[in-house]
Image 1 (cartoon, rainbow, N blue to C red):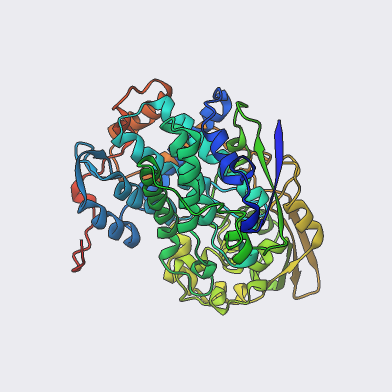
Image 2: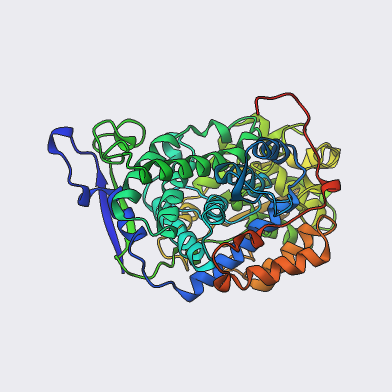
Length: 501
């Protein structure tokens, strides 16, 4: 049973009781120790595999190297592991979370949930795993924490829109990390409540990180929120409080940054002691691109089979949701999205570029599709510039449908040829979506892992990790370092620039 909680601003003189505050209600479900849902637990294993896939694939990308160099300076005898580094070496958990979180996020290739706002719930896993390793927790502890973190983030994303007010979606990640860690460590409601308030307060930032010329900070942002979430829990465990009430206060997030003093939000949460299943509403990516591009890549592949010669294309019109049009489409009004020399981070937020490449190649690759030679190809540039997106209220309604079975992130594409002929295709949701043509199952996650880690890790290490992670429920206290993946030191690149750490 889901309960809709009304969240609004109260003047300080009213002194809103804790039990009526959103942070307390979140803390209550985080501390309820509800029985774990079997399917949710299975999905956690899928997402740990998914995170490992994309983290190892990005192991030598510049932001990951930089974050790793920073983390390597913070060794700890009984700490956490770092992707790629020998598992016998341990580091402060917040720094392990920092670099592992950056590695997971760098390729924009892990799981997603879209509703009133955006999110990548898999960003919760690196900080929770790092804390679990440092505190010698077991597999069931980790499962409980991750399931709670997903539950909190998904429901905040359903109820509170951040992007409308140009706030980055990591503001929902700080509280979910804090709640997940609290659940994993079996902390009391008061401690979790205070850590959620602190975590939200310090993880609010603007969406400029995803606007214009998008930089490497896009990969660092959720890792930073995870790191801050760990520190917030540590302070709360020491008895330190947070700004209160963080959501409903007179000078709170809602009052001063989001909808204002008259705003009302409806946030769904499960009933106390009810199984948490929100992770089952989330979905991963088959392609390394913004999630709203997934269905459009599938559409481009279908259209390629229908068009004999792409040179005959006069223009391409994409009719889609408000979010897709305004965030990754021409509605964003970002000239950088049409620039062949734009950063990878910018190109993976340009549906015009993505659709052009997918239409030409009939496929998508996490590295080749973003190469400078690929983005500067004359035929691609010509096709790219012929593409325009439009908001269609029908698709916007589908995007926001409260029924997960009906919610869709697709589009209708009309290709107009030079002879006036029009070719039309539409797709409700990506083929790999849980309600798509061929939903991702465990075998697909494993296949993705093997493809992305091929030639980076040994076959022996690959098989060891996959066997271990699928036995997560039985991993004993102090053995979670086995979820790390080692890469030969010869294959790890370094950044030798002078720095502080």
